[in-house]
Image (cartoon, rainbow, N blue to C red; front, side, top):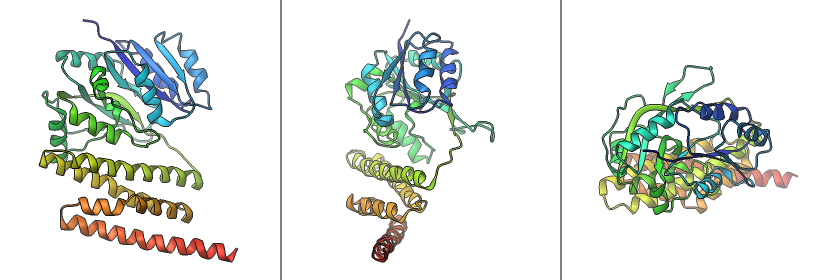
Length: 336
């Protein structure tokens, strides 16, 4: 039985890595029906590279748009997709040769699956040995997405929210009107949680099908602060959104597990704040978090004394840093 697969591939200034990604698509033993490359306003050689590969990949469709971020590019791809199944492929990663043959074969074992979950490999470009993302898992039976969440969270199983670790049945996505949150970094967190909560049937295949590239990136202090600032804001909003989702769940156990996961994600904000070099940027971020009631929401959601103490310690420290930063900025302005 022939099935159709749409690959949605956002592209933005990844000229150094794009050929490897496209070559892995050319090498697929089972070719996807369509490859939707959403050029999200690239300013490097990506547009020319995509055009070159249209001869090797006749099913490649190129959509160019002004920069809307990864979420916006993926949403554009969803609107354009026509396949029975959808896979999101990041254009700086690449696939094993039989990735799509294996994905579709597993999906066809039970055509009622809403999502197929699988493994991937961290790729360090030769700086160190590559290794599997999930190193202690085996193939699972068919279960609901909520059951998979409980399995991962209750057993303290490591779970990444990268959307490219899943193959989706397109009708399942359309029925639930899934969209990525525009301009949000790590938008996969909310998307994956929501998808699993409504998925009636999912299964995990313990096969590494994607190489997840970990490149070396060197940024100036200003650029690094900007990237951390965007990451902190998105992480905080993801945590708050995840708490809302957790509080809407009827199952007390699953609600608690999702709440704990949201708190853990939110706690990472404190660590990232310490990496900000600019006092002005740090002040802006702390005030942003305060306005969003981020600190109070995490504290209220925590249901054990040890966690509350840890949060309170970090909140007090952040508040003290906030006062110090604002005073420092004020003094410098008076001196000028």
